Image 1 (cartoon, rainbow, N blue to C red):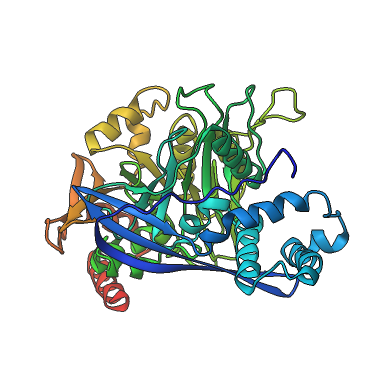
Image 2 (image 1 turned 180 degrees about the vertical axis):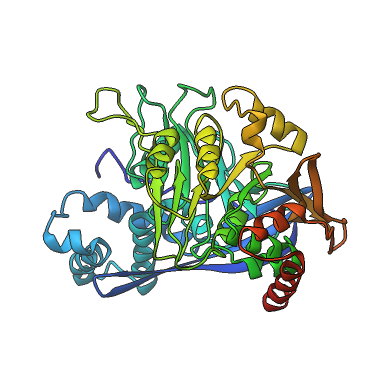
Length: 467
């Protein structure tokens, strides 16, 4: 037996407690015409004020035998074309060819080998279940021998869930290296921080060993829907009402300048994407992000992202948000979307709004006062005259209602001669108050030859359409 035994990282014994939920997680792949399926089970239990996420994998009783087969495979697998085209299929054929004559494989053992091969080659090892669980939004591990934490969109009334999964130092380093590699990035002692996007479009942040954390390597995976939420879905979820959506729809049509503020995880980008999908389908749109999260269906949409060299000796130059905004403003476009405003790139966005482009962005802030203070101070330094270009500020928040975390548009503010006015406000129930004196919207409408009564009529027409 070889000294270096192949090691499968598997979930720990499930946590005990009151059963809250139980369901299957299924993921299918098609590789060169061959179909592969991964099926596991999740149970969610509650005990002593904490909620646990149990990964229940099949074939756990065959783990040691599968490890033995995978260990021996190092000596007889060959890098043939067939292996590169379909590694799971090639491996299974070789296993059956070598073990079947001796009768060393039962039907269950064959299934278990295939299960773990799919999990390791096509999936993400022990993280395959939560990564493919549509109910999971974030997956995080803070270090060696620390339980993986799960943010579950339906079971988060007590905060993060604790998974029956943790890793020793070697396991965690191996997993982080695999995640970073899948994102086409690298991590090392010289460059201990990595950020990227997994093939599924999920954002990965990772750190390496104890270079920046005494707890060792760490990772966070932030998942996004394959199909972004539409505005009608957000209405049905209670994030905003149809009147508010109609107001924002019209403001976008009038090429307004909109800023969405809120805390981390409050749904700013989700709302930005939904609002942006309301733009005229014939419009030319440019979006700018560090890591691409925005997804639009417009033929005229051009997504741009930053390029940061991992190693200073690499050829080429870094391209940051400021460079991309400056580049975009040289084009004739209808809308400029800046995924998040943090620094000097925001000044250019305001300049773009001054030339007649529609613009929308997000900003980390908890109040309109804090937002304005940050916009006016370094490193953004927007003057009062430029601030008047900003038409609307949307404040989106996270609320806990009946043990369920929800996102709500708390306020919509309009820029006026007398400061910022709240024209739409959430009233803590499931409805919103609307001020009919939407002077900024009326002002934008006049540029399109529409009167106040025309705007009200159009708002009602769109509201009924959305309902």
